Length: 74
Image 1 (cartoon, rainbow, N blue to C red):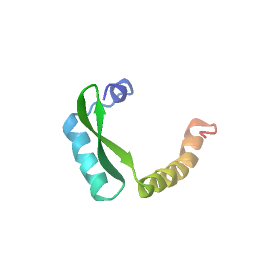
Image 2: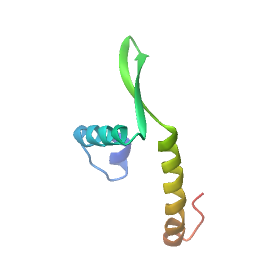
Image 3: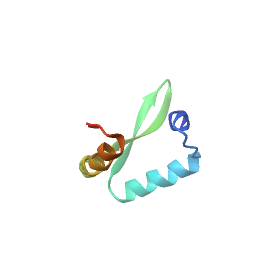
Image 4: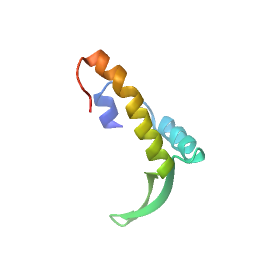
């Protein structure tokens, strides 16, 4: 969340929790547990469907971004 704050976004943990549940329900991400420093922590990873939709979204947004920024945003 600190990284988002550096870009002017101020969201709380509840917002991320809701978004994560929605993406899981839509089959875009899946969860598993990872051991880290003596603790077990949840970890979300993109599914094949999630990666496909992300790639498609990037392509669709690239044109408008290039137009606004006046450069290639590859």
